[in-house]
Length: 418
Image (tube, rainbow, N blue to C red; front, top):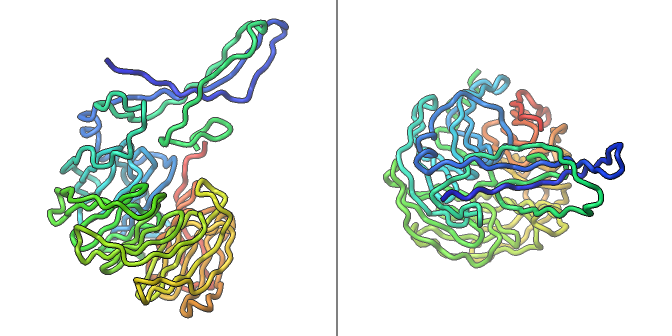
């Protein structure tokens, strides 16, 4: 028997009619549309490009940008000409929030499952494998009372009801889930790139990372290991319990894994690729903290005032020459930093409503501000060879910073307005 669920959202709108004994109330509910897992698998294929609704994680591969639309799927965007990006296709993957690319294969979560997709031809992708149940943290309580069904999408229904004023106050039940965020108003919240990224590059908010024929994924308090030597058929290997919870991001660099959490950054060695081991840890006050690293330093943005808690808004530069004992080198104040990317001596930071900030980090103890590209509120960025792709809630922005002092937006991909 299929169980139905409705999520009610009462809008703050109550109007008394001309008759004193009648009240009208407008409200919305979100009705789930279910599919079986077989139907979901059959539906994972190319479709014509669609509007971007809630941009999430990003990966650059060759001159294609793969953009996650949270819980819906992946847009494929051709950015061979950064000034004229073109959406070319959409892959429907319900429940997708994280992804990685290994050669010609896209790995993505489909709620609790891992799906492998052949993207050799971005216009004709094919599903190669499903690994069932490897991400149990993606279960959403009562919404999966029947685990044979998957919520493929939600439909918003607006309606108005009338009831006698004498009936007194009405009680409504509200349920919040990790599937989406409801706003207070009831809505869901010249080939310059060609050939520059034959190895896929992910943004700094990634939870999937690739290294030496392994894929590492992080959830709240653990790290999972997948053997991807056979690229079209990843094999689940192991789960490693991490020393702290509230894990947010993973950044593989050479033989190490830099793991960002709300309480600090941990460094794990992957010298034994199936059993990563802790080397050192850098702790800080509670905040969100994406991290990128090079041979000698890690760059950590701390952002407070969000779901992560805390009040710090800054860039921490950590000396990692001794991986067993990372030490804070210097802190630089920022407004509300999120994702970041490093290209040579240029560090690009998404800094809230200030926009995208560029810094010279040739001397990490004396970082200097170069330029701010303003007018948008980015949350993640990929930078490579003088071009950047920045993701914001209102668009995907392509930026030319070949001359950092003259950095400017040269292209934009629109996001659907709610």
